[in-house]
Image (cartoon, rainbow, N blue to C red):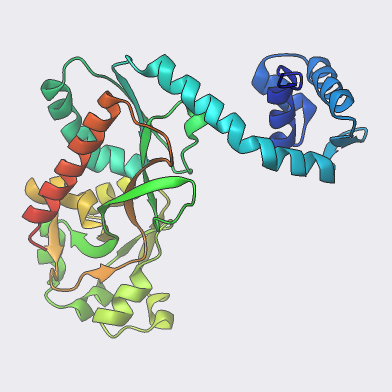
Length: 302
């Protein structure tokens, strides 16, 4: 007969080790810190080793605790994945997260199209700049802006990383922006999360990095706001063409120097945990997103 450890103790141990705190583990598990400590003590007594070194304000895993966590972690994840899959197998909802700029500038105009095509799907949408936490946030799938490398995720490229230059038509005409070197007379709107101006100007306008620092600029830390500033005649923005698509189609922006688009090492990737079987509704949503992105790439004129 298989001899199991105290099974109720395992979630307490995993949370306490991951959070390095009995109190934080208790908050996550919705129990008291004393209950977490009691469960871990039961596990330690059953195993015959100390899993944590306790101090007044913090707990630290022992070598045995770290080794034990490494051995049981994959099994606990498999249990969570298998249980979650069965619970959600007939669920028609999709829980999806993406960067705020992607949500505002690309996904929002398309969301209704998916819901009209698939009216029985309940779509739950969120946005975050952080790496998506699939377990804690209950996510099925996400879009992430990164280099595509993550050992724990399946990542499929939606749209490659590019940096192109845009402004309002009236701003272009007002300053007479006809060639890349003309940008030294413009106000450069800088997205502080994506520092592309220096590389673009050095590559296409012959402007050194030192010279770039002396040019007029506005620093903004939200990509969607950067694009809105350009629409409202505040200057020239450098951004991923995907985020400017709708505003280009509506004539709010023009693409300056379309032959000069800089390739950057990041891109928009559709991601979900490796080895997790996607429910049919999630696969349907995934395939629709890929089709929409593929259609954009095929129609792209810059």
